[in-house]
Amino acid sequence: MKKCLKITVTGKVQGVGYREFVQKNAMKLAVEGTIQNTGDGSVIIFACGMAKHLDELIDLLYQGSNSSKVSNVFAEPHMLEKNFRGVFRIIGVD
Picture 1: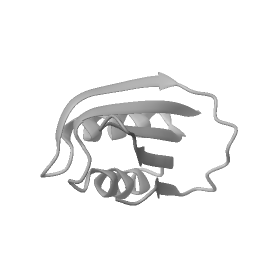
Picture 2: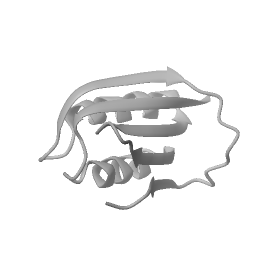
Picture 3: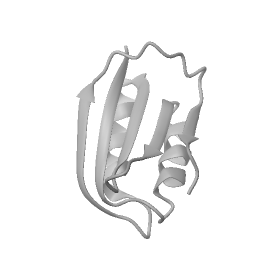
Picture 4: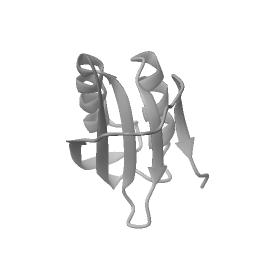
């Protein structure tokens, strides 16, 4: 069954290729959604997919990219009204 999550990741996750890392892995897992930087240095992810794929993505979020250092991953169920059309997008540019 498909579900959606709002995920906040804190730590050293901006300016280190973290969004690209997440996008690449989300696409491999057939998870759709978005990721964007926030003003406080964290990233916000909206992700929809099969529960087992979301669990795998969360495990990867903790690992992070080579240059990132993840402090915390907070995931909560979210009812999304947007259709991501099967893609995972990075919102905004550095």
